[in-house]
Image (cartoon, rainbow over all chains, first blue to last red; front, side):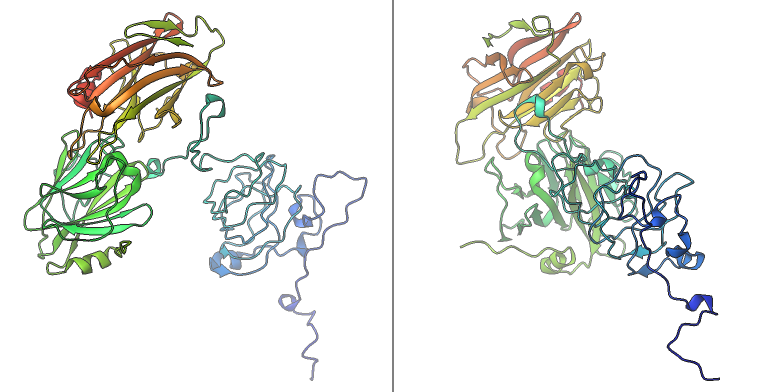
Length: 353
Length: 183
């Protein structure tokens, strides 16, 4: 039998064309609980649930990347209205949108890169619970629900009336206690546990990491003995390197105390901890003798200069918020400094003439 | 605004019953140097009845800008540092809050207070109106490596401020010893 190949097959359910969700007609004199831009599926009393693409067990289990255009997420039972997302949404929709058992399930369990339709500013979308790379909403008087996920939205576009979290940026101007700015939450408070300086006597491949506390990280000088060469990078990505013989390359980072942020002093590598906030990271390349790290409180830790395979140690120092972390890595014994810089991602800055 | 002399004290909340928070500002000038220069660092320590720090966490400075209990926070840099003190948030166990400045113990020429001049501590109200000011009197500071500028302390149900200007020749190590800190 010859069939029209282009006509829909109403007898096969899965071949039927899905219909776009249509906003349900709202009586003009009815309650205005839902804005006109919100699809019917967003309302708990919507009768046209079958018209709206709903997650199926198969799609939810796939966990794959979907690039579909999706309707706005259903509103939750939360009473706090959230700012509407009008940009690219990278949220992970599989995460429950609400702890309420009555909340509708998320449209897909996969990563959703779909561009969501812009809802009405008065619509109350759910709080973000996943990775949200959306642009923040256009200026709106409505308050936003707190985001509990990673929000990489472009800052600074919200209105002053929009409540912002403590990570709203460091206020550098402040004189009166009346206008106490919100301090950014220090990232170091969210780190995984690591041994402290003093917990370990020696760093090795088995125990490669220690972390200093905020006081150890900021008082006096961090001195490392036994270092053959160093390289540094500040928060503005200015890099440089030096060795204990006095050779240097790149750009030194000077501090307001007229000292290099990282440098050599009497054969020891030193870091000016008063200016910790200028430092991003540094490496200390071992010579033939063990490295020894010492801070103001007198606590020390040693680093074996080579592992069992004969690789030489490189002590990697990184600043994480208010604390310094020390990690020992091992590189080929004959590797030149340039190869070690490259291995750790250092590209030397070019000095201005 | 009242100027103070070393050792004098002044009532804060008794004179101003509505004073719930104060701004403590510390400042100084530096004699310029082409070489390594002393770097003064402000520090505030919450102390118990024995005059010692409640714990290492009960101090604030540039890298530990507030205490977990709250009430004491570094907030700005109009002076060299400004510290916001909210009396209602200060734990009951705190009897005084000492305000010090130490010269950072850098191994590369740490220096002393010799290069520090015109040091002061001031207390202002919520509107940043100055209530008290204590200017450290000129003196030979060539061996001083830390200095206690002043302290807020409880006096009954009220808070008072005492001007000090007491120097430490052994710097931050002496401060740590006196206040029972592990620094």
